Length: 583
Image (cartoon, rainbow, N blue to C red; front, side, top):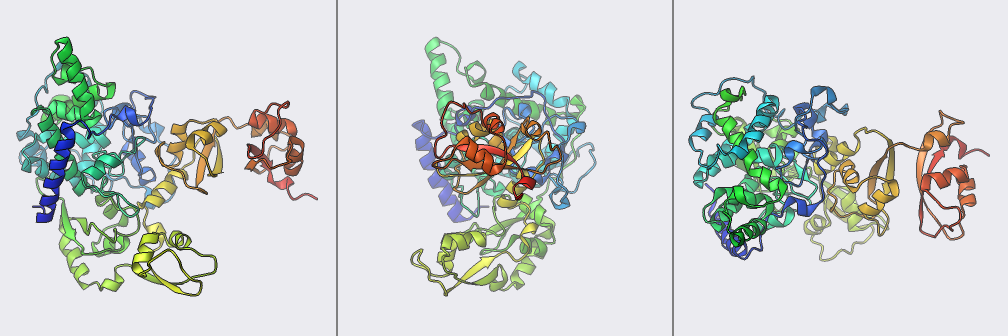
């Protein structure tokens, strides 16, 4: 039962949201509005082994899962129908070799018990039209890939009982507990090109509206506990907005209430029915509801589709434990007798090495470990929850530089040290909370997840681009002749994510021209240089400086010999490093 303050907050949010929904202002925007996305391969269901945490900022097609069955292997939601033989190269660090499904002790597929969670779910089905002809295609498609369904439902194991109970407590159709399969394949770190995150795929603004805090430390959209409550509240409001029609409410969750309302008005004007099946909706939304209904049918009678689900006990897997303040996550994992990866998989909302100092102050712990964790927590002195470092301020240092060094925030440094401004003096000291363990232990922190994705070996020539003032992903992609979508994927970003001055971006250029440029020295060690043209530069001067030919410079950069170089123009050079130190 939520705390009283939570109930008051939910009532307040519900009232304000209802007013916005009625005015058509609040939507979970249509996924196609967030980014243009080409669906490359219509039958990609990758294996669970591809879901290692090296991909744990999993991208979902902005179709909020309705196109998840057709999404490219990466960087969208990384679990589609794909043969085992096409596994990508994996990193060697075994600590990164676990998916969220692997965090759960694997069980052999077996017939479900008449008293397990699947049985409970089936007894409370309430959505209409599960036998509609529009459902059959997706139903057959899922049934052809039972391994995928088994993987996804195994990933759901830690969360599903909690979600089912929340759905039941609100009197909602039980099928809605399966919606995260459509949304995110139950990948807790799912992230879309449209910046939607978590198993329920909230975009930033909608998440904030429903009380999902998002900052450097924490993203409530990935918090399974908080986002489940927010998603169900949102769906209830949409259900009310569309006069009790759950299929319209689900369509609006995918594409926005405004999109559905406009389609209904268009049909009324044309004298057509206004139910879900007759509306002219975006393609992804037209496929969204049938996928949920198809999944529901297979769960209802897996034997009829030759599908075997692992039995999930009808009892809680996780328990919410209050922690009263910030705590190091590696330390918390040790206290709960868990791996750090497993703790992160149950608490994917935390971005860093510790919980947010300003809350929420709870952790989801496996039920059988909750008592052990509480006992250890009660014995832990407050000053040992995080490690404190006494830092002597050096000349030229700023709070921002110090915060980056210790992987914390300027705000936390100011709060901890009671600073009234950003001004600091060399020679003074700051107390800084830091990780208690080596940072490599925090493999699911935001920074290490991104780094793991960037470090993956891919086809082509790897180039590091340092972000300059005025750079955009569009400009950088044009410069290196790659797509914005690819550039974002390689760097664990969404195309609309902001860039930071000095940020390092990895670019994988296909069909590298360097092989012909250095054909006289095929074994030469190469380095790609991004050169910014200076006042007075010429092709001859640059070629001489880096010991390359003018012809190569022209070819690498598609330059017209009749046009002058402009100061600030960027050139790409492929340099033989062994020649740069010759006399």
